[in-house]
Image (cartoon, rainbow, N blue to C red; front, side, top):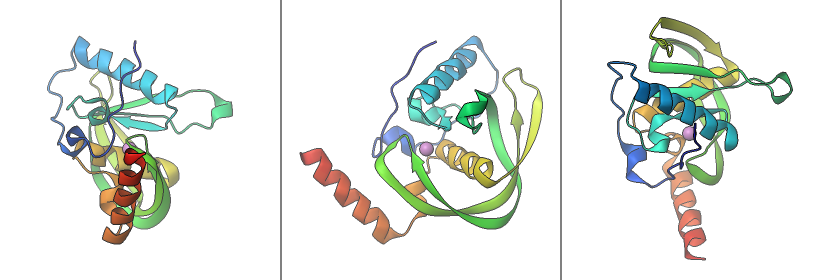
Length: 167
Ligand code: NI
């Protein structure tokens, strides 16, 4: 197990679309373990494979409150199969430094995919979990939360980032 490097906006790998996992190999199992280590160490509540430079459709997440310990969840090839309502939630991302912003998402979603043993799974999610799942699945499609905010806000962020990288 290892903590991996988290790629940061505007690195190109974050814009790429991850490929479906055809076979859950040892390499994929290892990637999942490393992604979990990386997420907990960051610390974060979700991580998509793109963020560690692996273009496989794999996400890990854990929205358990800290005092309740860890409950690692993994979905391979996650897909939103139903959604309802709208919610606005303040989001941040381990790949987007020093920024958070309100993002509009679906309030309730159903996600289908595979667990790490390859068994089909389906999760009904609302509140924070629904937001996290949509955020992570977006990553697999090369979409960041800053792609879902207004152009004005995004350009302000880009300016802030440029300034920071100069100093
Ligand atoms: Ni993110």
